[in-house]
Length: 383
Ligand code: FNR
Image (cartoon, rainbow, N blue to C red):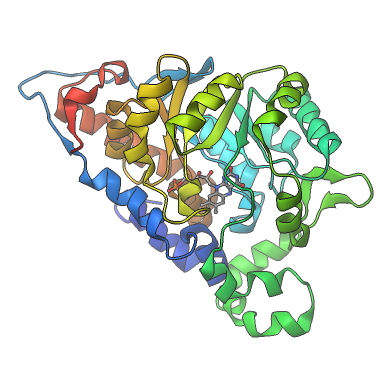
């Protein structure tokens, strides 16, 4: 992960492509349907231009902030990425450890391959638990109770996954067949694993295809991969659920998957400590607007009542600066660190965070702004 070879997130993306089988790389890299929203998320950042204040000395840049009272060394959280353990052995623990070392909070997906207690123990920093309602209410409540006991600081409830999006690349790469564990259907898709023997050996040593140890079903125990789709569809979260979720959790929670001002207002009414403007990185409903384009509408509607975060398309530290200028308090990054994790485990995630941090500092110095708290709409032109 030397700074000469890995200069930016695209370098990490290429390193990930070389390190893991195609089905795993495309699981990270792909989006829903025609991937229009996924591309738009990135393009929206590219189309915002800066308006620097030059001839200003900024010897120090203060990146510190907080979300829901959680202190952060910079305005970045690692987004929930399901099945991270497929990217790298004990992937969730490894990513959480790298985040903690950098003072960046880690959000653990419901669909983690590692036990939530082990993930919390692996990091010196704050951890949040992303919640999907899977199984019945008791299953979610027991997951929340475990998270509270383990020291998770906040919950992140994702609301944009009524059904799993249609990721065409996963379909073509045999994702469905590979989780059947039946040799016949799997066979045509096996060569992609043989092409990455290093990954394969590590994967098998780490226990191979794992179950989801934090989703414990009363009859069958930890949920299996093959059951995820149907289970998500059966237990869709609705606004009415926030009553019992709030009661069961009794702590701060964020709502992730806000696309419009209307839903942002509903989230505030539901008692959210913060909201994440997110289209799931373009992995759910394709054809929705880029998150950065929706951000001003949401900030106008609820920015004075709750903390607004954004994710989707963050690939450079300057993207984080742009998001903050347009009213976000912090961002989540998904693929940016997932590439790092797949490429090189701890070192890869650490490199991701380092790239984003040093980018941010340089950008702010060039803008003539000494603190994230002073970033505002005057530094950008988003027309
Ligand atoms: C995700 N995302 C996600 N979100 C969530 O709430 N629960 C989850 O389990 C997952 N799983 C997941 C897997 C992978 C491989 C990716 C890339 C993403 C969405 C994620 O939290 C975030 O919203 C997006 O990744 C943000 O877009 P970028 O940063 O990837 O462009």
